[in-house]
Length: 131
Ligand SMILES: [Zn+2]
Ligand SMILES: [Zn+2]
Image 1 (cartoon, helix red, strand yellow):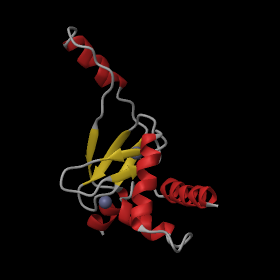
Image 2 (image 1 turned 120 degrees about the horizontal axis):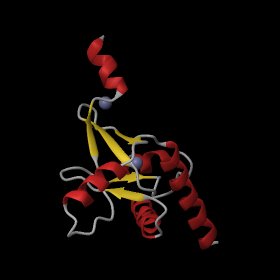
Image 3 (image 1 turned 135 degrees about the horizontal axis):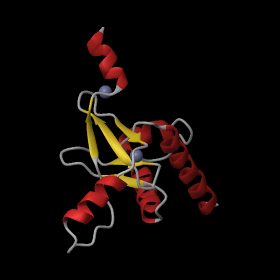
C-alpha cells in the first residue's frame, strides 16, 4: 500500500515536471501536483525530487540567490535564461564546437563537457516590449 502511494506520487511529480516547459522550482511543482494528489505535502515533493535526481531521471538547476529549479531532461543540453521573467528554456544547440575549441586551446587539460548559459529575452517578453 505504501509502495503504491509512493509510485503514484512519483508519477504525479514526473508528469508535472515533464509537462512544464519552464524548469519550475519545488514550490511550483507542489502546487501543480496537489491538483492530482491533494494530500501530498511539500516535504514529500522535495524528497521525491531528490530521489529522481539521485536516480538520474531529472536534473537540478542550482542558481545563486534563487530556488533550485528542476529539469525533466537529464541529457546534456543548453539553457536560455530570460533576464526579464526568469524563464529557463531548453535549447537544441550543441556545445561540441566550443568544447573542441577549448581542447585545442588547452591541450594539457582533459575537457569532458561544457555548459553554456545563454541569456536574453524570451519570445513572450520580446513581444511585450515591442507592443
Ligand atoms: Zn521572459
Ligand atoms: Zn533543460
